[in-house]
Image 1 (cartoon, rainbow, N blue to C red):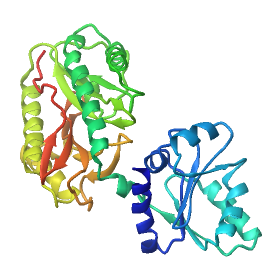
Image 2 (image 1 turned 180 degrees about the vertical axis):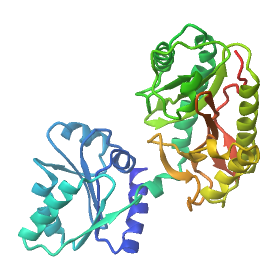
Image 3 (image 1 turned 90 degrees about the vertical axis):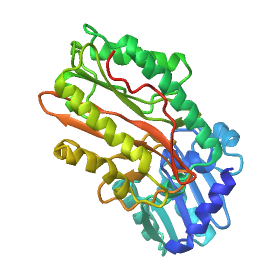
Length: 359
């Protein structure tokens, strides 16, 4: 499995006129090698595939990344990489510009220059992420399992969310339920945002006490074998008032429209526009401030992007969220989010949790 992924990366090297590629980003490193440690490097060329780790991870890397040649290294990357570059005759090496700091880049650049090595350091963006965007069968199965676990917990939330409970208490109970049922580390901090705080798309749970007849946005994910899902529901403990009913129905309609109409071959902007048009026609366009969705996999947020100006092409095998939302200051908000799979040209919703708002 890992070698097949390495081959896909190798096929991209000539497109960027690269002799080799240096991988530092955690999920990319795991995707290509299987190594789950928190620190390490991959060096991939058409001739070699190296994994470089310090003494803390040697044994782990030998077990998890057995297809890779082990380099037991010490110190910063600038201490050991120039020698390997010289031995392999590398003249152009790509690196992950979003992950490597400027300080590390300068250190490596200066070391190569001081050694009079004529090597081009080529910044790249989404070099591995673009490969990760199309999921393999085993990846999809892990995400299915994560979605089923999140479904269970979101349905359990209906017995947790009630007047008198604080947002923090509810969030902790949901996290405990996820852990008790087998989730690995949370893909992101759980959101429980009630009343006016539901207007904050990324609100952190607070000591606020949940009240009756007000919106409560819940956003959580589960992780299985490293793979994530991302689901949101908006609940109302009590009788929903007129504004809640109106906003909820518009948001749900926007989501259902997108779920029914997203097709393979669309780009991210076209998919986003499906929901955005529904919300704009209801005169709430300014209250939908984020994109429709994002890819989900080893990271909770990855390619593709479903948003205005996104040129990412949606193809079969991609897994992403569909999550329109309407957020009104001093009142609250509504978000409804499912993790979905694009397969046979159309969307399959992996999330099954109820979308009934009242509890």
